Image (cartoon, rainbow, N blue to C red; front, side, top):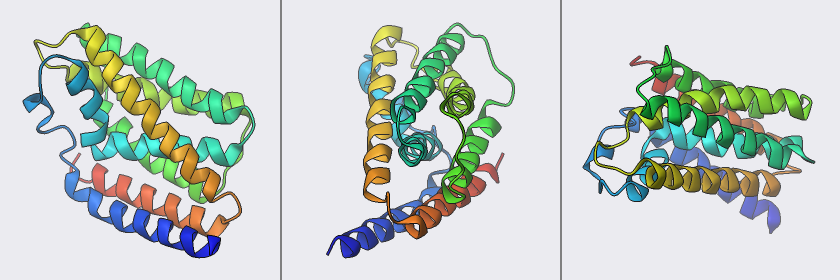
Length: 198
């Protein structure tokens, strides 16, 4: 029965991921949301396929690494994402933000698919670099009338939830390497599709 549930969960994930490239215009429509900050901030990672995939993938990879990595890796992403958002809000642009975000989806999917294991510090450094660019995009796309604090709290909360979803999914697939391989490959493929228009 457990195997059937895992199979169904992975099939649902794969079907969902297959449909995500159509959302490649990841950030259109975000500015139509309420300008109060929190709602726009919370929605930003959820409405962008690139952000959503990368953040779930961070949780999946952290779960596969196990131990302290389950907490340290997502926390490092959030920390540098917050710093990057501050840069974006201040108007300090990082180079190649969108290509780096697409690369994060491809790389994280590949790390999951290939079951790459590295020390926790190295994994934290990898996701922190990607988090910096995700944060820069969040900050640069903050609605003009939004409160930076409320907006920041919104996207940090959404990111934490997405990391948690990835951790939970990774925990259910602990003894299912084939499913991890397929899920990681699907994430990487979606990242390639997102990168094509760039």
